[in-house]
Image 1 (cartoon, rainbow, N blue to C red):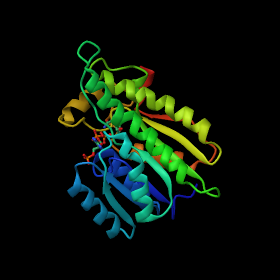
Image 2: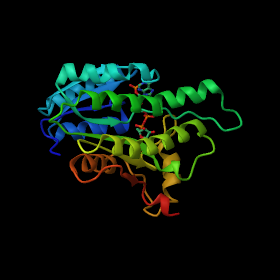
Image 3: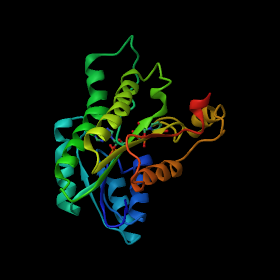
Image 4: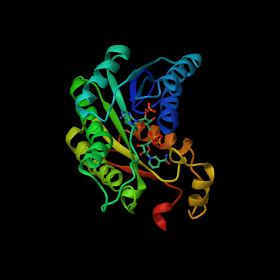
Length: 243
Ligand SMILES: NC(=O)c1ccc[n+]([C@@H]2O[C@H](COP(=O)([O-])OP(=O)(O)OC[C@H]3O[C@@H](n4cnc5c(N)ncnc54)[C@H](OP(=O)(O)O)[C@@H]3O)[C@@H](O)[C@H]2O)c1
């Protein structure tokens, strides 16, 4: 798939990983709908940055902890920038809980934001893609679904659901829509942690460094461009899965 001239929606695009993917898509010639929840100012700044590089973008806020609003986001992006043919599901929570202290409310909050909204965004995305068009979805997941965290119980199970959803949707939506995922390892410090926190984790990795967002952007854009790959989950983890 040629990214140039396509419309892309990136969720959680105002900051961090989502922002880098949005910029990568804009630099590759896509019109980018920058979704945000609370980060209105960073979203405005990203819009200005894309426009200053000669790109086209629009911004919009939807609270994806309410999956019933997910379809509105695709409709909003279509209205602003034309038919959406690339969807990157990056927005997520990172709740701290364990099997011992998880509450039903917390479990449902994690699953609504991290699993149900990507599902219903993809559903609406697929509904609106015209008969003659093709599409690509990239879900952002976590390598820890295969070596789970104890302290992020709801989150890691929701991301495990994303892995299964990626394969299921790839099969259901073929051949016109491809669905893939990028599984992240130590990429950025989690909100509230500093560089030292991730540097200590990175020291244990085969590649011995923090990833940063560039390798994630390369993987996401590669999956969008490669028309013979669907249902794939690419690890961007410095070799963490080998240890
Ligand atoms: N960073 C890493 O090292 C790492 C590692 C493994 C996996 N991942 C995955 O990679 C993706 C991006 O990571 P990240 O660190 O950039 O994520 P993040 O900073 O934790 O969150 C990304 C965005 O999610 C949005 N969000 C949160 N609650 C929302 C809600 N109720 N409705 C709509 N949007 C909401 C936020 O938007 P606003 O700011 O606009 O509120 C936020 O900017 C996530 O899926 C994450 O699970 C990251």
